[in-house]
Length: 87
Length: 87
Image (cartoon, rainbow over all chains, first blue to last red; front, top):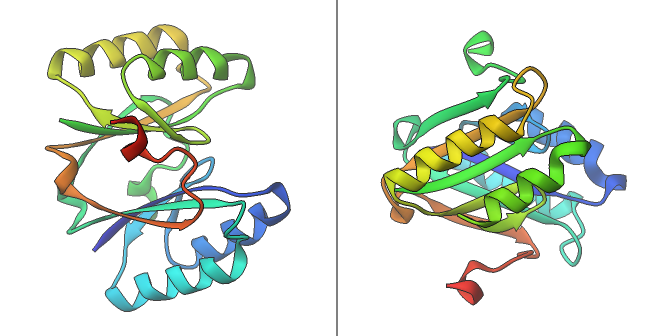
């Protein structure tokens, strides 16, 4: 499956969230990550994030797709971290 | 078509980008918008954003899907602006 993860967390937890998400996904921009994961990794991401964030304050949205072909990406301006360079 | 738009713009342009995107999409979180648009609206969004942002500095990513059924959304923590309340 393919994920796009966007988060809005208190500044005190931003580094932790970033570091955690980088172990599974590619940093794309600001507070946006994406990448292909297995079901097992997806579950680990959900569990890990629940441990890191304050669920009463922070907000993390995980958009889950069958695969990367589920969407077209249009970029305006610069691509902060081109995924082609990483894969 | 259905769009998820995430942006990373200089703070001097954030208000303009927000205000512009709100005319077509729903604010979801931080710098994230989403919504159903027509092809004509999609083109207007692209043209409008190119006029507002500095394409050498800012970065806007538009993820384009056939429709909202193309993805599943999982939320951890709070939902900052529940779309069900708006639609």
